[in-house]
Length: 605
Image (tube, rainbow, N blue to C red):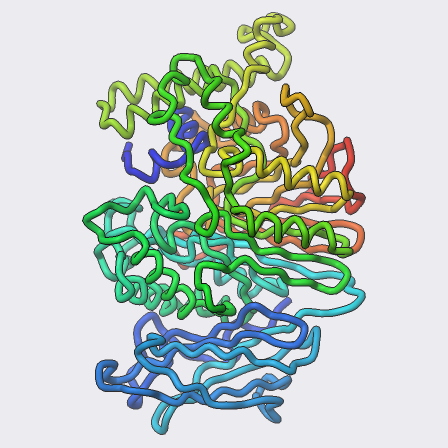
């Protein structure tokens, strides 16, 4: 078993897994492209094209030109044109953008004056001797009465962990827009995450060191954007993106990060340079403050989409259960519970929180959709599990022996199985109904996923109360965990004694593009089937309706005036590009506002 800091930083479900161990336009509208820079002319477009942040009348288009000699290149004029015709005839607009080394030779144009709900094609041309880019496809947002919109939702693309088969499937999907919820790149040095033995051949990160400077971040983005599978997705669909932590450093918050130390320079400088590289390389609108990327997209009368930043702009430092509340590991969780429920702890920050709730309250769209990074659904686990899980995390981070870790893992697996059995209404030996003591064990719960909304409960409760009070159809989209989830979002009881029956919304969370999930920490086989683990976790977490612990993929969500249909698309491998197949699981959400009944229902396959 390989122990790394990615495991020690993951909350309940990562540690629990260790303990439980035992119809689109064709992608290539014009052909070309390999993983390496092309060898023709003086300048080359080797990083593909992209579009993003579509509005009803405008869209961002992007590319990068690579000079033959970047140090001596100076300023380079890059032409652009956009047309309603796939052969680029009769362009509706065109122009020239001058780029240079200060922009890392990236080109980002906000094309205005377009028609709503219209498919466009675009292309870039360079100075004499430069072959033009491929033709990209994009689409403006519809306005007025909208009958349907479909999002492809993805996150967590770890280059050395696997091929980007998921991006290739997104490119050929019927989605209108791609919502990327962060971890577009990873900052780690080679061999850190994943380990050397788990790294796919010929996919070592570039540079091989941990990226900390502007030059480093630029080089890492350049490597990702040379990947032809990622290029295919950007070429076929407009993206709406937000960042998570790894675009900067693991477990980042507003003034620090777990994966940053004094030897790596000032955190503020690293943050500023990481943000600059992000804005250079992503098809996102850039304002005067590079740290502010939360923004709103109104899709007619159907969807009000708000893309939030739960990571950098307002997040307080996450609570560390082991370091901050060691008494909780011996049973006294009162101070721990008080801290994560404090009204002064913030995930969004006051400004963003007020902006988001105001937009939701004032919107008349059928669906209120939050695109953000971390799980909002409550991961409340019995304290019988909380204590050994905390002990396991302490053992891992403290470098305990494999034997000591194995003992804790065995204990957690046994407790997980026992509690799931009790939850089903029987005592552990299956001899009869659960006893009062058994039920008390289940009722004594606490959150463990402290990097997510579970560590910032007050702010979550305020937002959900607004959604319930104003009878909004709230759908929260999440990434980050590398696994797929679907949860009901319910209010806490007014006396904070538990969860009420009032439903405020639902959460749909995507799996990862290539980053490993629970399957990194345990082996699923006939002796330890994945369905058994998924069933036990789902059984113990009341509001959790769907959970996939082992597969990579993306989520499609189609919104209509009457329902939202969520379909998780899972690829069978990211270790090879050959023979890639897709399997699906679907759930429906009815558009009827807040209710006391469950709204997430499985769709028969």
